[in-house]
Image 1 (cartoon, helix red, strand yellow):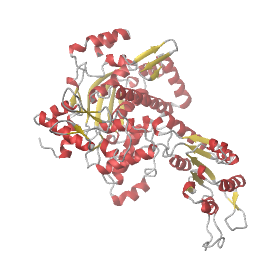
Image 2 (cartoon, rainbow, N blue to C red):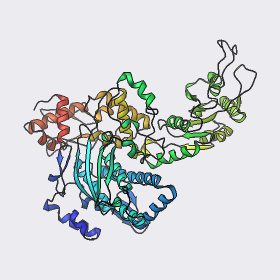
Image 3 (tube, one colour):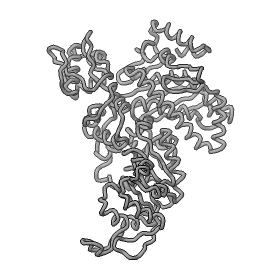
Image 4 (cartoon, one colour):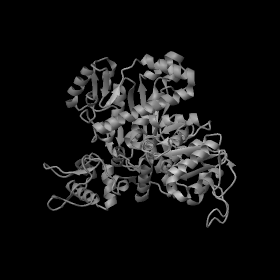
Length: 607
């Protein structure tokens, strides 16, 4: 198919040529080994082909829209992108422009990977990986030539090398600035990172080593799992919208238990790092950056588990008050009778049991930041007292007679609609407007799925260190399940699922679906199943319900049972039918040889 790129043909002709070539069994150029597969054996019938991809492109001229499956696309002049690129570089500087374009490319790559996963859920890993190169060519960005690439599904290690030809980014950059001294294919590097990371569910970073914009004959890029780059933070800083966003947990290797405290002290923010590159996450980060230098009150809104406390502590850390106290209080966890003394303190003898005077949260936060979490749960009486403290800038301890001035920046957070609470009479309107000076809405995880591979890699590295483990990564089934899961608990739930998987698997193994979704989580119908065919033997597939029947080995009739028992029965049958040939068993089940080998070792099956 790459030979066709020498001539200009219509999309209709491209589809016809691709369809006519299906019977010729031509192979893709290059040699790719992924999860036990070899692209030299993948014909044009391996989905998704160029014809498959072209059939996903739809034109709706009546209402001015173009669609790539369910994603709206725009047919844009390359010169207009070049003009935008020049204005960005000239107005905000090369470094910031590079970051912005890299992040835009990452989102584009992540979207295309989601399209491939959704449209061809049973595509072999190498075919799905090659689909990214085809999509990038179909979208008119660059022609990709594969040098070599390898992905170990068990260890999660990826390494690949590619050559880029006819880069549209290079054309525009050279036209504007001529040949310089550094690579310029920023969006394409972001695209490759976003596509492969989303496809395999772990952070895989691409770096451009040669580029036409720096005088080389062609562009050459290398992709590796993030932990295998020596100085990956230099690459990651272009994925981060702000300097306070990071992914410190990509470092490889466990930390001895005795050194954890010293490690945390030497790496501040490791325990709580903000990770993400999606547009909604970046928008929230930009707002955080804007309000940080001020003393304005900030109200974080969003569902439970989206990271409101993380954003609040980060806001304090990047503000001029960073050297002063950060005091947090969960309003939902304090009984109403104790709320006043917790906020404002108490004088000795104010009530029975008050044997000593003590300061409240306002006094302890003097000069710094006070974070009021779950502010919507405050009683109406407590709301009135809080309002007075905010208006006057002073408080009185319970049982006290003098006013105490406090200099406190207040940050509040809630997972309820305070406007609706005001309408229903459950929240004071005057307090709402006092708190709602600078609102920042934090999106749920289902609206920032581009960040899932980054978060999975971050928490995997974090819990490998915390629990002294060397878990390799995630199986393809687990990656797909994560992408399809609704995450009602948002980031907090994803964090818990990854920690659960790290604890359950053995060192060197990959986290699988049953390791993370083992506590009654409701998976989508298209995540995992044991599918049964009436016209042949049972097969293991990635389609259907996870509540699968268990076969009786003698009759083959499904019966109720555990997913793991069904998996064992299917494996035993497939290995027996193949005479112990794991590759043949894998083909029979529709999974990779590495998956079958891992399951066989896990269940102690001898071949």
